[in-house]
Figure 1 (cartoon, one colour):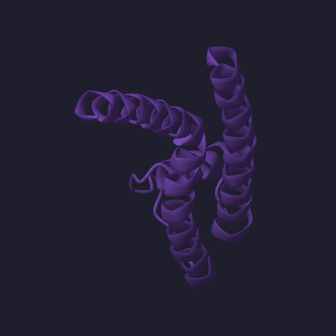
Figure 2 (cartoon, helix red, strand yellow):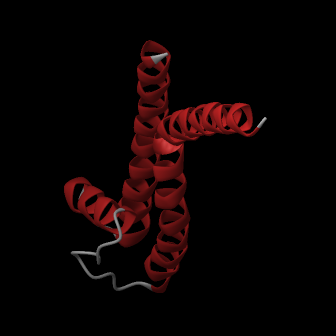
Length: 114
């Protein structure tokens, strides 16, 4: 049972890692091409926004600011979703174990009252 949990956690961590890289790449490309930032600064801004921090380098063009608005909205939902995907196997395991323990206690209580 623990091996299965560890395998599922590792699988979900891999999925989250790949999606995280894709989100950072998307944000970096947008900040680089639309905000005219160097790649390192673009990646820094993308990661800061993705993790809920404020951008480091301010943007000056309207197009770059519109991209930043969209990326910030995307990042808020993305971050919460990735936390849920990462923790889903552990929560499932916990609920499964809780349900089994509860069922055993109920069965034990029924035997005593009969």
